[in-house]
Image 1 (cartoon, rainbow, N blue to C red):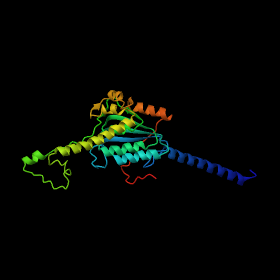
Image 2: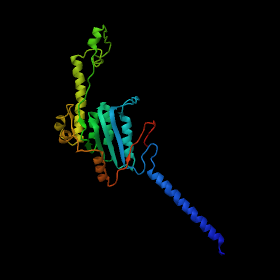
Image 3: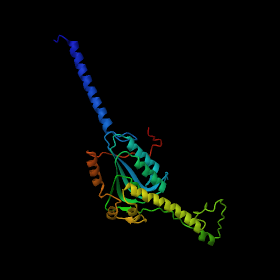
Image 4: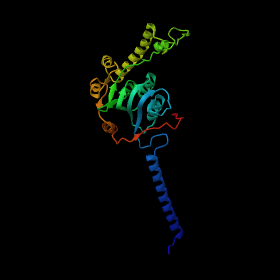
Length: 280
């Protein structure tokens, strides 16, 4: 019979208590490391995906009929990636024909403020404003079948004035300024109005061309040579300096793995069910 039964019992209880505590801490650590929070990336995630899909808009259409990108949502995701110390790389997943100039500009401005390397992967389309967004990345990849470029600003619209005349409809101009109704589809465009509209369009066009040249470290004349609205295939775009490499997502992920020195663990934030995300 043991001379110290109480000590033996105490040591036995202590052993099993310590064992349970170790298991509990291990389970907690595993959950913390691998689990994905409701509105954030898991601790193990080191690459954040920001999708630019469909038309780029400054507001939410709430139609659900086709994919589109709202600039404020993309900006929030870029800011979240910059704020998250576990994220080492940002990947722009792009398949878009472009959209509103200001909405694209908002996303480009946010990319410029991300203090982490950014890669762009253009899949189906990277045109117009979508290409401008891609140009903000440090490295641009494009799928072999992608459509690229279409660098130009479009302000075209339908003029119904002749149809209205045929149907006996009269447009009565009661504006206080002669240019106030210049893009109204129910009246013809005067020569002065056309000149004014083209001045605004060319102003935006020149700003975008200059910014792309700066972002891609290209001479502005080289960008102007392809900034006429034309679409380019990847070989043409690479020759023009608009992209860096032609490849698929596997090439992009291999490139990122080499850059960060570890296997990419991808994170994609979803703000669709949360209307109050604010960064601290």
